[in-house]
Length: 353
Image (cartoon, rainbow, N blue to C red; front, side, top):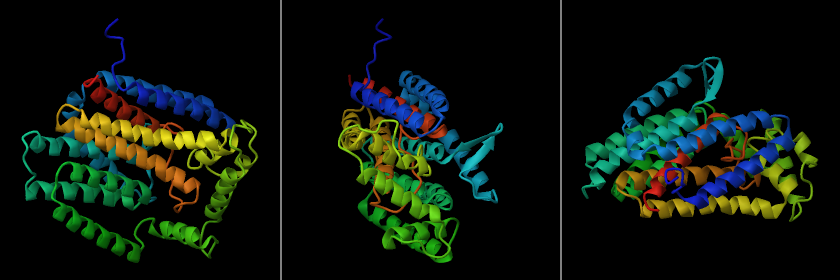
């Protein structure tokens, strides 16, 4: 019976379960793909409890092979003529960027932990190595998915800062990245023009020639969903705006949730993600060893930043991106990776219980 007792952070697990229940309700309300979502949750929670039982230090042994695999997948996506965000494996189109991001964070945590455990600073060569890895992966992802690249880059910078990399190195690196982004925007690499169009609409609130009209339609409808919502659940399953809202079960699921469940539930979801970040910081502070501390920071910041960007887009606080809402949006690979990441976080937290 002792083996069956859950020893991880019960608060994070409870929040994830509540978010998942909301997800099934929203997906069922938005369409007929709730059975598919239940299957995805089955995979996600299986991986959560699998990685909860696997020692995180065992997983760290695969950091380098996983990074190499991520590099192969990224190169494959780059040479694809369509610039797709997915790769076809065994007839299935799989989203690869969540997997790549997780592998990059895993490798960085292990790489820096070797020095931190001995209270040593990373050498200049080691810092340059990390900068090169970040540049390669974030730069490659940026060509197809700017928002995911930005989230991964910010999370990597947080890890470098927590890992005691010199501030001067970080400033120089960020300056180089900003210059590279400026060049990318000037040359319209990849989907940069799409990003420009979305920023233009967000800034001017109107469609310009050459811009996809769905951008404006989604922004207007999502704002309407939130602006007309009541404080308490009043339209559960009967929302009207959701019927014409594109991506209502994915990129704009938060707007549907607020329309049907009310502003109070929307605020609960927002603070739930912030509370996960708080609990993650607590886990990192009490973690055994530098690797566990860095990995917890990476998972928590990445998870929370993705959620906040999704909510900000739905509220028209920032331009449209395409980020899912963890454990609420419909998804396959994203749910699987989120489940595995939270499982590893649970495994780290059980050491302090």
